Amino acid sequence: MVVLSENRVLQTLMLEPEGQASEGEAKLAFRLETVVSADLGDRSIAPAFGASIVINDDGAGALGLTVIAGEQVEFFEPAGLDNMVKNISLALGTLNTGAASGGEAVGLDHPEMQKLLLSLALSGQSLHEAIVDQSALKAMAQLRNIQFVEAVPKGYFPIELAYDGKMPSFSAKLCPNAAQALADESIHAACPHAASTAHHCPAAFWGFSKCIERHTEAATGQHKFAQPTTTDGALRPFSSVLLGASQNVLDESLDPPTGIRAVVEKHGMKYARAGNWSNWRTEVLAQSPSTLLLLPHSESSVRTFNVPALEIGGDLKPVGGLDKEDVIGPSNRYPLVLVLGCSTGLTDIAFVNSISRFRKAGAAVTLGTVALITGRQTVRFVEKLLEGLKVAAAKNLPFDEAYLQVKRAMLAEGNPFVLSLVAYGDSGWRLEL
Image (cartoon, rainbow, N blue to C red; front, side, top):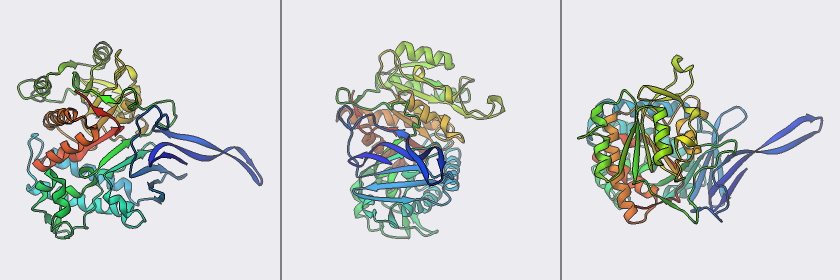
């Protein structure tokens, strides 16, 4: 059961047997599956969506998509989803740690970049076909804003890489207008190569043409996601940054003149760095940072009894141990959280997924990565993100519009890092300086 308001998912529930069934009779009850919004928009700000997608599982654990657009509902079970996600992550990580590992853009015309984009377009067209092309929901391709809810653990689905162009041939070339199309959304719509199988274009990926509001699961209903309200709908990430970094991150990526600190202070923000998790919590409780930035190493090994953990400064913390005191300080402001590390967006045990934990602990918006990345790449992204957020804040735009424009600009430069990003949080947050 999906509870909606103007195609915005508020809650999902499952109808299940209750107690012992007798011959010819069984009691049924609704089990709360996930809570996205605490109300119907009377206190929260709840923008409408053109469509929403819920991913959950059946009794056998197979993932399926419920797609809702207008008064139409379709259900799909994409075949081979696990392998597809794994292959996408490996492809992104290979380029991020190869030609692009220095943090600089390799260029859209770089052979490795073209190979990656073609591979993603081929996989992404299959994703698009599963959602749109074989259903009554073709209008979804034209929608600007959609919502995606992961109602169960392990519900990650690379919706940003759905590709609404023609299925390219194996020998397809990058569209000559690709960079311009990413800089100006109107160019792709009028491009003579848009319907060609001989060309592929990154502007056709949903993650670079749509604002996608993502929500991770909150299965028990005991956790309430931070969401904008009618009395406070502003996200103000610019006052201070708290940084926690893995001992594997090079000093040049952290310290002046080329590191994160220089970027942060250039934007007039206070800077603090936590050397371990105890220090991290102390800083949160003392300073109420408006932005939390982690460059951790994610680990699940014998050293941590196969429990997923995040490492900063050589100190390991079980992801399941992250709570409000690690996110919210005495000001009770909901921060922006950036978790930019080694596949920190995905773990094999999703109920202790770091993105989910930070969201449940009170993060307004959490950004994570689904592929291996390097410290140098994060410096460039943080710089571009802060610049983009300030421009958006000056125009009183929402976070998701700013995030989309930053991704488009960085990919136009030929930086594959942004292909690895996913953002979780409410699209109703508006940015303020």
